[in-house]
Length: 133
Image (tube, rainbow, N blue to C red; front, side, top):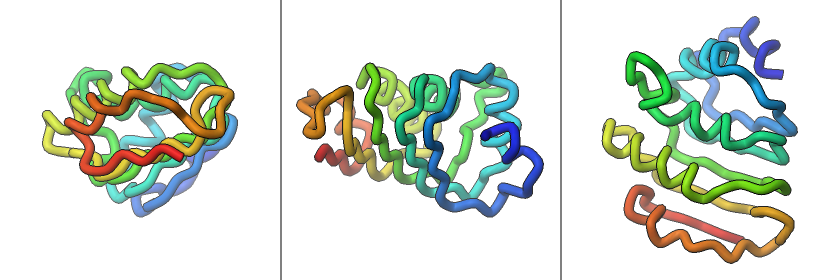
């Protein structure tokens, strides 16, 4: 799916939902995400390897230290697999350090539970609003 997006001008995309994304090497992922300067909302839904997408938004993941999607304000996750909250904390911390602070992280579903019972206290240091439902 991300490879097919590379054929379109995504520079003005403001909202992107990735549904059921597969594991990818970083090259196709960056080819698609780096031009997305105006992306405001990213929704990850049932991605098989969601941490790869989250790591892509960590400025330290690219050799140039570029902030991927610098205008990104909201990350929403609707995920059924296993996932570590520390992945999101690390991404949010790196972005805040680079001046691209997330405003909202919305966790709609985490693991196999409809109602996530997560410790988001550390995440709240780097994000203005954290919502779990």
